[in-house]
Image (cartoon, one colour):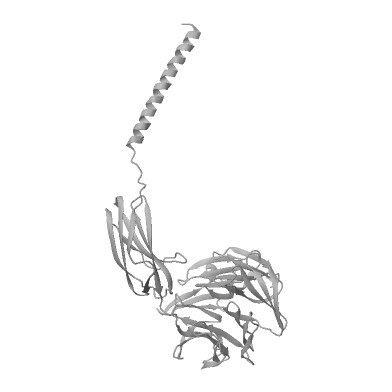
Length: 446
């Protein structure tokens, strides 16, 4: 064969080989696909029998939960749990079953054991899993919680050489709990029944679980091994926030675990923490206490908005009717200016001027209602009506707290505490402490 004939021959041979190989691989592929197990795409079915939607129960009740559950192949696991309708947060234990069959009749008595649950809407989530697919069904209930009660209050008392924490119960009987070094403020987490203090002598924070009489050893915030001066401590929405000289803000939950961290940039530090509903506003200043700025934070510690300011800000008030807005209160000598503060942008606009209204602290009661106080005077002020009532005057160094359950105002001056009815302004009681009062916090059952 000549060269041309060879080329044609080998070309035909390669073509036939490629054709046979293609057919072979196609056959193998079809054979493999035919042998492959088909994926189960059918979800388990769940038919809830009990409880009926919107049934009413009390905390500590047993709720019968029943459902018929089936699957086209096999049920591997079934779960039942109670969740909060508003947040989706799991609020009860999870009960698990392993049927290992194609059908299962769920029938369980679910005890609602959390005495801290508030009245409101909840639901049972029933989940079924067949090894590949998961399906859920729901049954909503109305829950009547145990009423919130005031169980007494705690006092931080100045014993000259150190501070001490006393408990005053609902029978007005006091008892010494423990020494708190050089603490200037205390906080109480009612859900965890945890009492917090910040010792500015050792620069450590400590906590005490009052139900279990369990003392958590004091420790430096931020995981430090050396002292980092504590500047402020506030309890907001279940978390205790602590700021330090190096610019850290830490938040601790009821287990003394760090769940939130913010760090100021450069040489700035956070010297004031303001509560705004369930979040916080921070006031940052530089090392000289100048170049002031305010930061509104997300719940994870990230900055939501930021704004510079050179003014003397007394505090902020949350707006229930406008979630993205707050009231900002600014001291201007003997007067006070109130502004509308945009939480998204950090910008503010003038709302009103209140003459002869010089206060350095506030407690928000409702959207438009506040307690304002300085060392010598305590007043109630309504932003909407401009109504002002003086509760106490001529004091030396006022310490103020508010009992949300009984709507009473606690005003301490020196060793003496006077209670006022918030709505009428009348005196409702008094207490004499063993030493001058530095701080007051309420204790509730939840």
